[in-house]
Image (cartoon, rainbow, N blue to C red; front, side, top):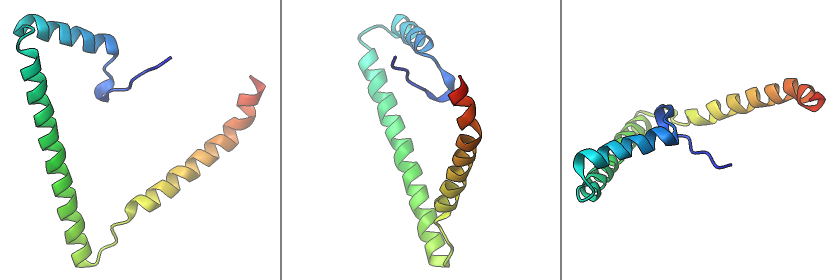
Length: 95
């Protein structure tokens, strides 16, 4: 079965209902314009976020700060995953 996870935990049926309401309110001829506008807006937000990230990274490097915090976070996540697998391994096998 194929499931898609959306932010804010919106299910497929809820998305279909929202699209149906938008279709009823704006009509089929306006749907492409609305989708284009949403796409452009999302792209602008993504570009702005990337610009902010790069400015923060440049500033941190300029100040000599360690910017590789993700390495430590990934190590901790892997450690927790291993602990969970170690604990839940025998439980999974019994079922």
